[in-house]
Image 1 (cartoon, one colour):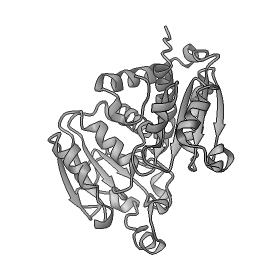
Image 2 (cartoon, rainbow, N blue to C red):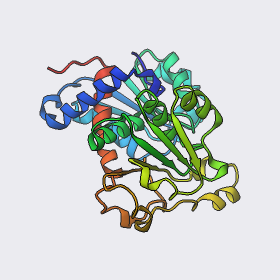
Image 3 (cartoon, rainbow, N blue to C red):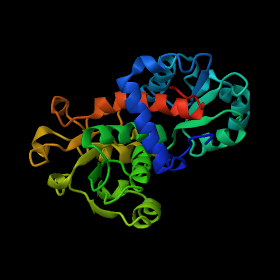
Length: 306
């Protein structure tokens, strides 16, 4: 596999292989400390990012490699009107692999079709965020021991939430997954996701506007923020931004082993009083993301560590 543009580019076997490698990295970090010596990762981020960009860079450094970084469109030739295709061809001359974030859906796909080195989609608009999904699935695997027969609640912005779309796609390949979709009507999961992923794969799902309705049934609660940058007008954002705020009182009836996830950054949708609850796993997700990106870099660069 040359590129990772969509989580569905990875088979279940490949996902399981990345999990296995990530777990080995966690247990034996020294074994991987020089695996990518002489390799260069180019991080092309045309949209703000903290976790994803730093996670990719930390991953490459911890593998012994190097990083070339573009942290905004204004600091690259994109500001002069250079096309994504030309940028990809150019950067291919300098680096061994590219991680790209772009506000336009499909931009990493275009880059992947024109680069001569592997391209990783680090988030494209409201479309996909496959490496966040890798962080998510490693977190679920480590906390729940697997994926089959889980009930997963997604809460907040399900319309524009690329992390939600990617994770639902990933979970669609496992058995017995039930999905609870919690959102205001304006931010419901797009119809194509319901039809082409949930219904096509025979996944049972429920839609509700009430955060508490299915709380006692959930094994995983995946919170998301309402994203100001995806709205066309401020009025709609202000009306919906506080739709769901998770506070300790709202998880009183939740399972003791339910896990609370969030792709971050959070604004106010999870109270800081939740942070000390043993079910809170969102900072574990951050760390797991680094390990899965390390595993992915090794895979795409075809580096075998014995």
